Length: 311
Image (tube, rainbow, N blue to C red; front, side, top):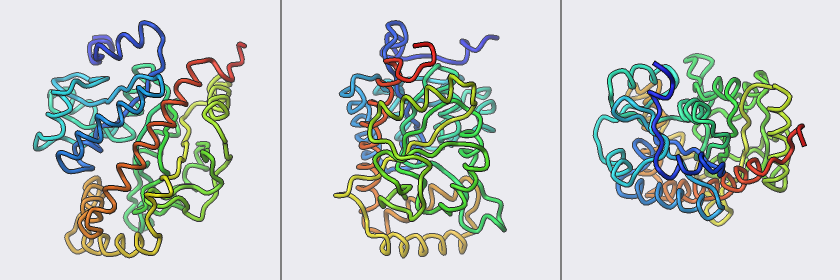
């Protein structure tokens, strides 16, 4: 069975591929596991519209009926947002969920894989996974980092999720040769806040400048992705000491309840929303929308051939 038997494209994405229009991949875990209904559907539709406004085509990715769906209809978005028991899919889960025909929402790692299979170079998300706090004992390290080391997709994000050990996450990325680009910033973003206190490898001022670096990397045969850290807009930024306090409370609850592994992140994000009385959700939506603008612009710049060695 060939690869095409596992992938289906929405009409909009199929037409974009036919005419060579820029496409931006979007994950689906943020819909099924990251936000409550109906905010998750509203956010997903708004993010897609923002990408269209940048003259690019959105492709939200999920697993349904034994297929990798690249681009979802409104009905499919609703199903993903409301259905109970949607599987959170990373690299190891892809073949199982596809073979069984279950509904699966793609994480950063799985979305990168699917985007690469579909020929999409830019992926927009909220924040990447990374090295969890206390990983020296638990070895809890997100599969996102290994995927970034091997899969040729640029990931536009508001940095790494604040619940992680950001310093160790950046060390891991450096070890595996993953460039960390700061979009109009010298400081790596920390999801809910603009700054983490850790630097980036290079600061770019425009999508065109980032596109030249990406195209050069891949033209040289340097395999792997790139992290494009795009800070949350200042008006939606939370205060660092407030975020730290909420995270410590949520981490303590997770330990008390014995929550580990891939269930940790959704639990913590849900508790952060509850403890902050919804403030983290507002920030989360704002940063995803901001990433969609930059991701759309980056996809357009790449599609225009910036930086190619074949110029």
